[in-house]
Length: 268
Ligand code: 15L
Image (cartoon, rainbow, N blue to C red; front, side, top):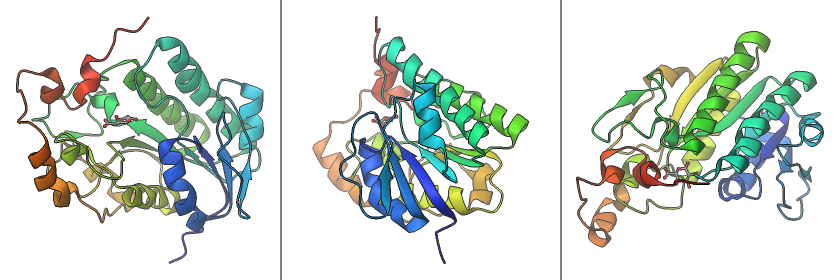
């Protein structure tokens, strides 16, 4: 099956951790991959082009988006921090992105949301995408804004978006919590590919996780995306247990899905 459903795809946040992991993999999805970030993602390969932009700069974002067929938006703040930078990158930035998508006629976006939109649900709960947001910090609140904004742009302008509530996307799960939240880089790419290629995406929220035995998230409402994970944290389970201490059940980071994010801050 050809994965090349789009001629030119924009990857924002291309210099970041997940951007770098996706850069090679997204080659399979397009003829031309446009890379963007505030800082250089490095020399472009033959199939790549680079357009640098600060997400808070509307004119720069417009040029970044002009001429692409789909957007994989991994840019912005990806951890908790002071409200100023979150406001610029994740709130103003995502507004600038959707305005540019509207103006330039881009019809499909994969938006990197986060599990921290629902971080204050308990680790003993299994939640679905239609349960209310319970952000565990300003970062989670900003991603909840992006989810709502993208729904508005779908309802009013028909721009389809998959909001991918990424769990923990690293080479391996680092701790016991990540046995539930882990998303391998290959599964992240499979998930984005599914979002880019499913015939009708609509506006969809999907939890970004591999096929982990322990999970807190139910993706039944996103079956139409066609994402079938092929990796699992289970193969790391014994090693993770061997190198980590038994959890303190009175610790909020152990009680809530957001882990340590629930006790981060305050920021000034
Ligand atoms: C996130 O949203 C962060 O970007 C990432 O660094 C991890 O901390 C991840 O969540 C997580 O919840 O493990």
